[in-house]
Image (cartoon, rainbow, N blue to C red; front, side, top):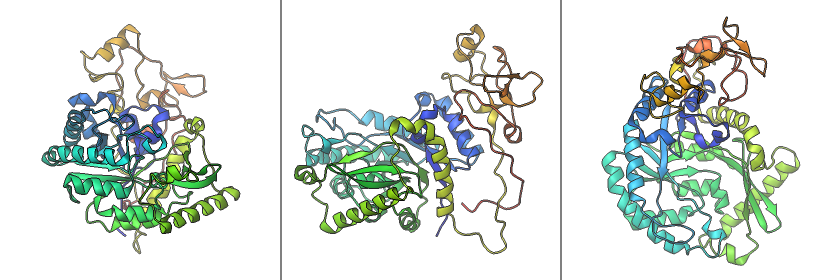
Length: 442
């Protein structure tokens, strides 16, 4: 099986409130190979920011994928028309400037769960028109509008919309395959992934379960490798594609009500076959067995902020092991580290559209007047620094100076860090690993 780059989806770490450069640093520290920004950051309108984000990712060997696209040119809950063309062009141009070919598209909405929402066929017709209009723009820019398998449509319905829009595989319209959302749309994940396989351009690799509930079932996310979604078979299918696909780990808390005991709700999924329904029943039975054994549980959304970093870190490691071929005979088991990241630039855009180091930066001006504190660079937390002072957590940080800009720092110095800024994950930096020869197999 060919190797994959395994990264993260930014939404998974949203509770940590990291700025875009901190997200890339988090990926580097946790051996992720890239970041999908499923929703563009607020600074995305500034080309200077995009240029620095692009260069920072390239210097550190990280892939970038973009988001913010839409495919339903109307409000999915009311049917009111809305203009999505301008927004799609904007994010497509941003993606092209960043050098990424992916723009994830999600129009949101839980239409089937609300009787007052427009009929699915009406929304499908509108989607076909929206995709037909978007295709030339994305084709000219060399970017793919990757429609997420979210809660709007099943894979059967997406294929019909693609057909009506005139789209073809390997073109400017594709799919961002969310492996767990398929359960919520009453689809067996492996069968659904194979249905849309020629269209897959990006992924949200997410495990999950399907438990019995008073009104039918509840679907819920789980840490990759611990749920009942057969991720190994899905990744094996993705490996058969001739193009490069990245695996972006996504995870979050919560559960989704699936009132399948209600005939009216079940009728909203006309493509659900008896065979696939039987597969879902077997998945629910396996979920119940795992939950009784204590190997699987639902994590409520209020508890996600406290658990997100540990779960995403573990899921990323699982994804790398599952998607990497075994080492060749005689090759080193533990390959050496990557190029040291340029950490001194990590938070230059945290406060506004101008670089912190620029004399005209409005963010730096606020720093001088004391109306805003900068996001400290990792060098501000080096233990044992002669200027360091203990903070409330017991770690030592350098006192902030309104005239001091970010201090360059090497990767090795950062791994001696004992504390971070308030926006950084609150765990001790991992110990330095010995340098060894060879490269990672993924």
